Length: 258
Ligand SMILES: O=P(O)(O)OC[C@H]1O[C@H](OP(=O)(O)OP(=O)(O)O)[C@H](O)[C@@H]1O
Ligand SMILES: O=C(O)c1cc(=O)[nH]c(=O)[nH]1
Image 1 (cartoon, rainbow, N blue to C red):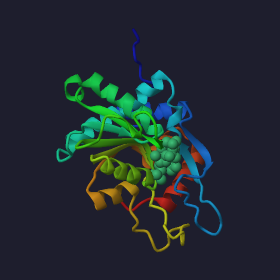
Image 2 (spheres, protein in one colour):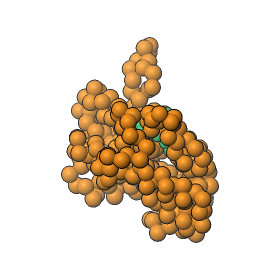
Image 3 (spheres, rainbow, N blue to C red):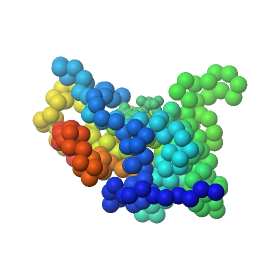
């Protein structure tokens, strides 16, 4: 039998989110440097715009780290569903490949542990990045989405490309995405599609975040365990001034309007 002790809080966030943030820092899930993102933010003449931080959910690779992240997801999902009664109860937790896969599985187990009656009828599924053309074939592993309400769990959202691809995939399979839950919402303005005026966004300050735009376009709501703002607060509390300044500068340039 194990006893769980919580380290001294880093923030004023609920305990599960605080433990999650502490795990991110101690396991190097959250690192600081210069990173090129999937969305690229790089279509300007001076080369790639790089992010001063990166969230690598692949480093949640021990049982205790998985417990920290899945507990934070589970509580975020429960409060998301209770504060938005219009969101249909999910039949499926869907984790986009690759990092979403282990997150959807471990979170469903945690939800079941917290409330077996509510969560026992719920399944998980995930996609293959390369469609399988033998055996059972197809792009989906786990429960079929046909006619089902699907709650999507991913690690991080930046430009929302992965979210939009997942919505298309679920719709193709006959299901309906009823919400998105991410560990980290970077809350960035979506990158320019033309590549012009990317740096500084001079005339484009009204651009909303990826999740905000999805809410406007499709009416699909979302929640996150933490946002860029929480990361900056934690760096301030830890006295990590260089990192805090670099993240604040990035936030000043790229923060979405919503
Ligand atoms: O909002 P976006 O701009 O789409 O960026 C966020 C996505 O980028 C990463 O996926 P990626 O396919 O790079 O990684 P993975 O295969 O390691 O999960 C991440 O896991 C998100 O799914
Ligand atoms: O935008 C991305 O590609 C991205 C950002 C981040 O912090 N972590 C990640 O895995 N992907």
